[in-house]
Structures are given as C-alpha cells and as structure tokens.
Amino acid sequence: MLKWALIFAVVALLCGLFGFTGAESVFATIAKILFGIAIVVFLIFLVLALSLARR
Image (cartoon, rainbow, N blue to C red; front, side, top):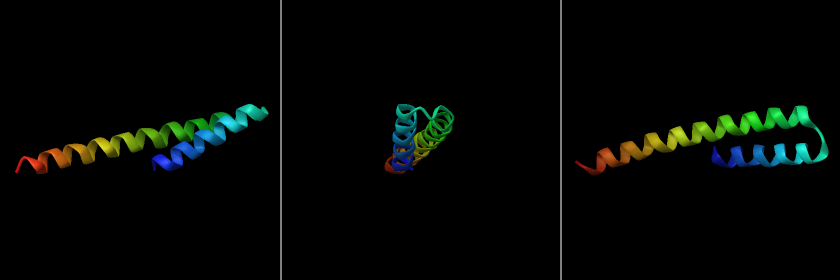
C-alpha cells in the first residue's frame, strides 16, 4: 500500500510540473489517504507484534 501511495505522489508531482492542477490535487489526496492507511496498518501490526512478544 505504501508503494501505491508513493506512485500516486510521484504522479501528483508530475501533474503539478506539467500544469494539471486539478489532477494533481486528486492524486495528492489519494496519496495522502493511502499513506495514512499504511501508517495505521503498520501501527496495528506493531502493537500486535509487541503484545504477542510479551507472552
């Protein structure tokens, strides 16, 4: 998922470079959402791993 967030971020940068500001904002928003989801999933797995390691 983090891979897709980076891809959308690069596409947003390219759209901004070429002047497609509408598409840039859409791709940037998608990248932010995917990055946020990736962080949440990472934190969930981190908590699960730490709680299972204590047993």
